[in-house]
Image (cartoon, rainbow, N blue to C red; front, side, top):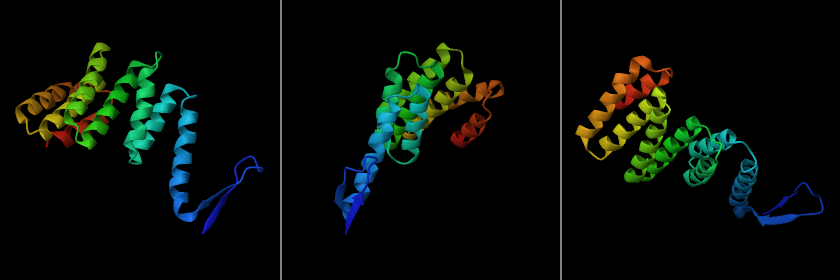
Length: 167
């Protein structure tokens, strides 16, 4: 089976066998999104990275998050969230030291900017890594630290996240 792709320019025609079509379309979609992302604001790139992560494309998400972190004008919130998402990616890959490093960076940014929500989220994530390493004493310290911040949280979803990780 041959599939004919008609690009915007009608003078160009590309023919591909059907079995290669799916991978080509995925690559073309990724390439076009990346090209668009590099001309967008950091927040747009972050949202795109989150979509890639949710679509089980962690390597693509990592590349975009590193682009956000390389920007000089990125907000502290976006920087912390990017480190946090990179931590999730590393944790999903089984790279627990890498995940821990990213979560610690996210927490430091939160504490440097007195953002209790970001600091608490980082503490919950760090606790999860230590729990996964079976270092329960350290995990308990971080989850208790997060618990102390619960009354001051602005983002009430973090409370649910805390209870999910406390168990």
